[in-house]
Length: 234
Length: 234
Image 1: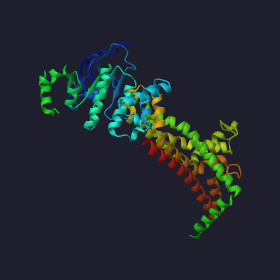
Image 2: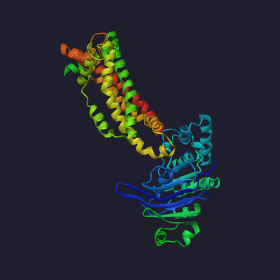
Image 3: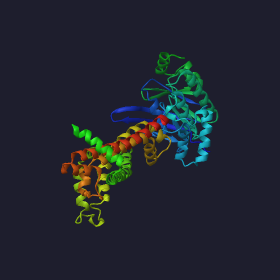
């Protein structure tokens, strides 16, 4: 399948009313290992993902894919929203929207649930699952679409260390199978573990995009240095 | 206050005795109100969904008008439907006036706005929760509306019950368009109004108790179903 990547953002701005949400996002996301987006609260991390994913339209600037990304991208939100149906039906739902026949989509959904370790609870109603389980169902739901690029907005923000680790392992598997992972996080340990390159946002701008080692060893901007100094590096 | 005790005894006797006339009245009341509820739900719920999900100019005024229509006086609805269905009216050729059909039309007009307005609120809340996720999965607005109607089904049961309660309890509309003809268009409420005006307060009260019992039974069945499902699907 032809790749929809690279994704290029050039001087992307987003203003809602008088409020400037994104000032200047200029960035190229290429296929390959995971890209981690970091920055303080309000720096525009979620906005960047929403713009890339197409949930928000830029006020100015261009967002260009190598080819039409329709149907080839997926996103996992910070708070997974589950429909009132079984975990399996939630995972299969995206395929149902695309007209995949029932037998095929159930098979795919069951496979993805197995790979996130939730095969045993496939028939349980999704909304009564624990937070960690819902996060994995959300990941399975995105995975079921076999996206070329997967955006994740702080997927482990509300999870305990074990659930976080489980999610990271799954993401590692997906990345190895060729899915481009683009994830925001406040957890710098996680950024190091998963990321190949780091995008640093500051006040609605992309001010640094560097390989993970270089970003943590010698950040190229004083803002990034201050951010790293202020965060606990666990 | 002996009248209440007597009324209960009469009500019990009527129910246990299986009075065919009473049975006819109860059955007509249920048929008319259930039919009106069904039709109103078929019209009102999609309208509520459209107002909840779609954004178009003039939406806000429509929502305000719809909310106001929840307080529509039954006699006014009865009068308007009477004028439309009377021999000289635009729909006179249908020959519906003074038939159960006319009563169904009147009650439908009365409760469709209630169902639409309450469904709009329920679905708007659900849309706020699921909007990003559904858009991310590629759901069209129509697919989203169908999904959310199904997802909020338990809340919508309560909405539909509110409409049924309103239909079953009103007298103003059915008495004008139905005419309270014994054996043809006499419902619980019109019978109560008639017995009251005849001075047979005991029988009127007994009929009132029967009406309450019927409405209670319908509500108990629906809420039992709802609780069962909520426990199952969260």
